[in-house]
Length: 415
Image 1 (cartoon, rainbow, N blue to C red):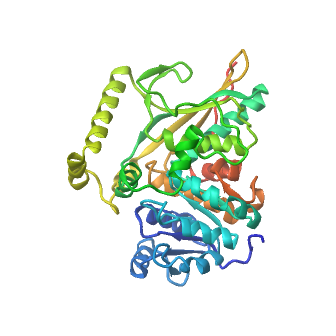
Image 2 (cartoon, helix red, strand yellow):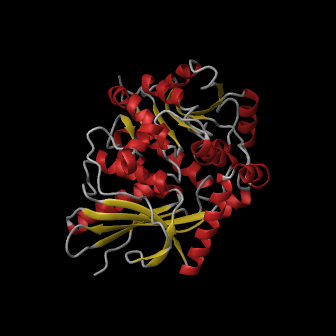
Image 3 (tube, rainbow, N blue to C red):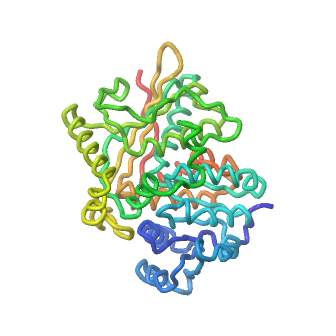
């Protein structure tokens, strides 16, 4: 079975009424108004409202009703009608998205989402990878700020190391140099589910595999025992003070999986980690203490209730339009060569005008990832399986993101 080129739609945005789903729909209508796409979800009236808000017409952008939870069979027709489903229906993804993935795999349809849930990503690989390979369905999780900048940045830095110095990497580190954004209620709810919710499929497998939780069959693991630093410290390669990065545990396993899927292009003994840069040690200590206090308050049920009730956003709520527009991020990815000279290559990923990392820029990155498969399928390095953004989409995604207005590249070599 192969992906049909005569599908009715190039793209279906599923979960289009959610916070990020609406941003994704707006992005498509603004940048690709002639694309054959549809909006899908559980509530027809809400979908029609989104369509009206983004300025699309009923004649050009249909709304399709499907419910992954109450009526999984409704997804079969949905998946069979499109080249790609971009799924934004999470909070959390683990109990809503498995039927969507299954429908896509069976139909030979490609799939993206913006999850950072390792148990979900582990489960889809274990259940569907082989069939997805056979049916030429590309299933790609983590197509937003988690984990495109990390995954693509590591790939660019490692390839530059190979091209410039003909060696593998001993280490790769993503440094979030600067960022500005805010959380949505959906992200908060997903975090609460991961920390305090019931046992989910894949959770035990993730725990058993440690830092290589997402590695594919046949992978050999590696040297990593942590995803980020424990305390504020000075990074000799990045030449800045750094603190632990909150999303490192979600991003790092994706990058390690990519390394394995690409035949250990980065090196079998290459370590990977992530940190956030701070101006100085004092700022780092204050930030880490504040985060520790926040974490302690979440662990204690009465204060957790107070935070959820009065301080943190609820599902459907998120950063304002102004926060989305003014938000930004700059990541640098430092690769150190596995030779006595220890050469360094540095990749960069800058949002520029894409917006805040977690939502507006995530909508951009996830849609561009989806369009790699909908519009440039033949250029992709892999044709099926439960993969990662970098391994499945490669430089095609880099090129599309650069054309979108973001800036991705590798710093010039220093003499």
